[in-house]
Length: 439
Ligand code: GUN
Ligand code: ZN
Image (cartoon, rainbow, N blue to C red; front, side, top):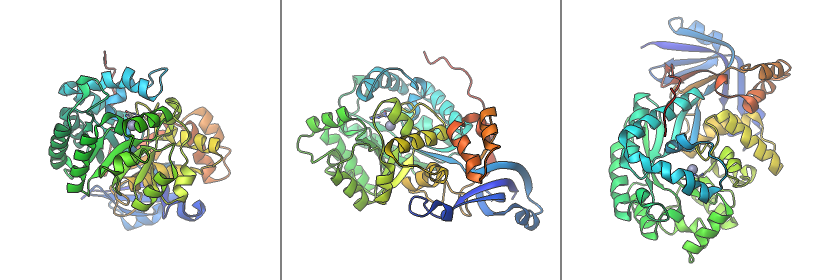
């Protein structure tokens, strides 16, 4: 089997830098190496030592570039790629004006194939090796996404979005068809190659209690499968949930009472939480997902990362495209930093990079497998050029510490900072997505 040795500065984590002093658990080796064989990382050590031990390995020397685990986006919507950066609306109006008409088009398999491939290529171009995506109500949209990911050998999570009310007729299923289609797609895709399925009720306003019940039953039959949904993103949304579910104790209860709260659950946004909801997430071991560019773009609010991490709640980081305004997990880390500042919590670059890799992987219950630069993980690797633009370079040149040299790329970097991406041990030469007529 061919061995590859990547040389450069390596970034590894031995534990969670929110639970420990970051300086004890985040490690930069300025002359590190990563040995890759058969799709896996089989060694992380001093570059010179690995080179001496493995003279047969093909060497790629990245110099002072930073070799990181590939970025893991823990929540996004591939069908919204075509409407990213749509102006002027907050959540409910944004869904009705831009999102639902666009998502209505994904029963057309050729259209879905095109957007799925484009989205995955855009993700790779931005250094993201795993996407966790909502599809649309159309089973075709699910097959399109998983097939496009399989072609690229990418580890992805996705599911058929289920919604049977408060949406246009073109975008409604039923509780029975949501159950049947989700079950069939789950059996087809979960564990097929690198794919994992997530049962996906969009959010409680677009599902009847009957549909939530049916999906809760499906989850109980398949408890190891992930479940993803949205929660407590905007205040008018929360008020609407109270009207729709007058008996519920709070927003989380609209899931909990139907069997949709569990440790394999991923709850996107979670900005305006009540104490009982936080307590339940902590007790159950569920994961929340921070979507900072979306939260500022749609005007949702300031996620309390410090408070939720202090409660031990697993937290992933995500673009939430197309509510989020960027495919870049660098830009997403920058937005998380800015929201931290607005809340009075200063996030260290080690914490930001951990969220984008290990934290998201942990939210997906895939810790050690993806988002991890360590032995036994898949060789999904992103190499960052820390001097990708003039303004970044002149700032990095003044850095006194390794982290000072990395932070300008977090705050100002984009796809130009992505030197190289490896997926399952293969160097990716992604196609620059070609212009498309989405009209
Ligand atoms: N809540 C329900 N659906 C969506 C969506 O597509 N995007 C965002 N940001 N929030 C949602
Ligand atoms: Zn979302």
